[in-house]
Amino acid sequence: MPNSSIDPENVSIAEMERFVARFATLRGSEEAFVDSNLPGARRFKINLVGMGVVEREDLPDLKPNIPLPAHGFNLGMIQAEHGNGASLHAHTTEEVFMPLIGPWAVFWMTKEGEKEIVLQPFDCIHVPTGVYRGFRYVGEGRGTLLTLIGGPDAGKVTWEPGVLEKAAAIGVSRGADGQVHGLAKAG
Image (cartoon, rainbow, N blue to C red; front, side, top):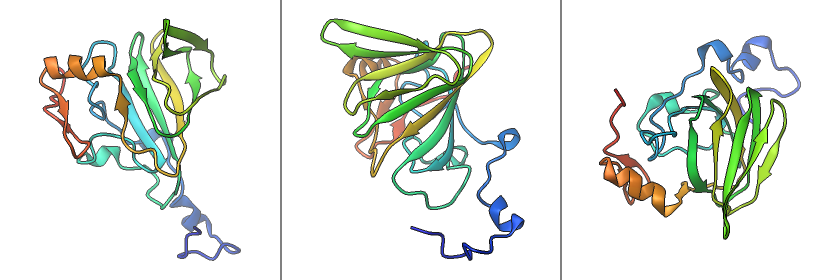
């Protein structure tokens, strides 16, 4: 759906600036998901543009940095220190990962156990719908991973049951509304 507030044949620089997210001023949060305080799952989630897939819609810093109506996808970034990333989860749509800074391991669950591929900067992987997947930064310093989740509606994250059990053990749960409850900032 086109943005009806602009003339597509005469977009000024000032109007186009509304569609820009400057890296130096991006908002995000380390408290986006039910696994956010689990060991190895600390990460900074940045929603660049598109539908939200986070479990903390109450946090203004998790709103898309480009607040336009983008339909059917979410483009975001994850930043993490060595050994951190996301626990095993699935979406009802595809997900694509591309490391921007440092190598990232993408892992997934099979009948035989977890499998893993390490991606270098600008490598790209598409994870099919319904596959439990996770990722972690395996480089030095702080890494950055570009994430793209397809549409038309990614719904909420489906966590591998063991992840929810670990979260419950530290007093964190996800309510029927899909939102995280009991999440406290790590000290």
